[in-house]
Length: 214
Image: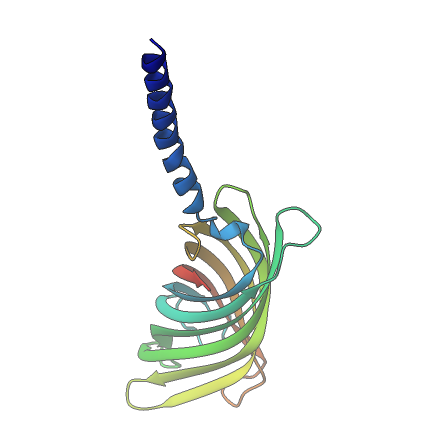
């Protein structure tokens, strides 16, 4: 009987050891979600649609164009306010439109328009704790804009640009996230030989993108 009891205890101990083993291994393989990390650098690629609201006196119709861009950014360690994560990013975007501009004779001329800008964005992000991180902020920078009409006539402009930004990050794992972002983008035009007064190029921009965090 003593030998039998010893054998039973040994079997129970062996089973307990086997059952406990995988839990330790699983814990060692746990990877924290990206939003739990203390901050760091990231790169992002994005693209989407531009809705042009020019504000120009040339009578260009409002149109939809496309854009693509890249960001290099840095998220700082969370501050004393729980969930608040400040970030800075360099943002460069290229955009293109096919437009029709009114002319003095009452007709319209087809134009090919493209531009790009570079901005420094300041963002405030909020970690909701479930992998969803909404954010907002503003950007300041410089733009270049070129408009070329059928027949070869063209004009270009450059100057100060600013943007208001709102978006949401959706965490996938410790490195990757997807995001959707809205910008109100404004290009200021100084008084130009083609215009009597100063004007602006206003746009609403909607983008989808992927972010990789180092």
